[in-house]
Image (cartoon, rainbow, N blue to C red; front, side):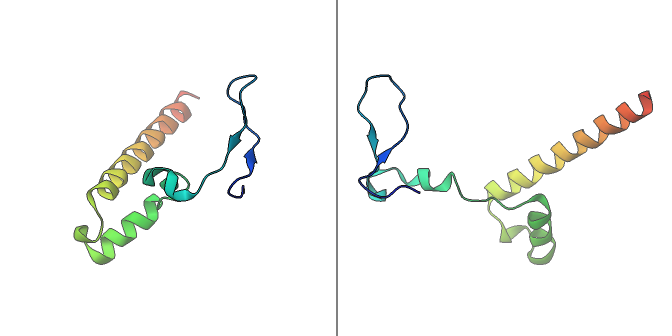
Length: 85
């Protein structure tokens, strides 16, 4: 963790001034969401089962669908590899 006003030990360009941490209000709002942990597939599915589709937003519905499709692809890849043996 870096405190406000501290130099950040990162240099993108050689011989440039060091980067200094600023107040959170000087950065865009989306930047703080990068480190937020997103719910897992199981958490999303259990929330959908218990509370219904209106309990999650469109972004979470899209994420749930993507996670299900990804897991189905992994399963089919695993099954095809194990049948090749």
